[in-house]
Length: 57
Image (cartoon, rainbow, N blue to C red; front, side):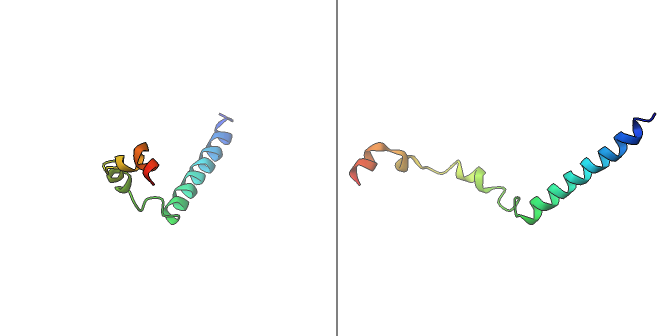
């Protein structure tokens, strides 16, 4: 029963740290472009990766 005196404050502190980290990520604009990476993978970048085109430059 004495272990609850340790576990409850520890869990509250960890939960508070998680909340602070989440609020920091919101303020740092981490969630602004959720679709950008999904669309970027569909773009055709084969021309930039072609070694023959790099030799011509």
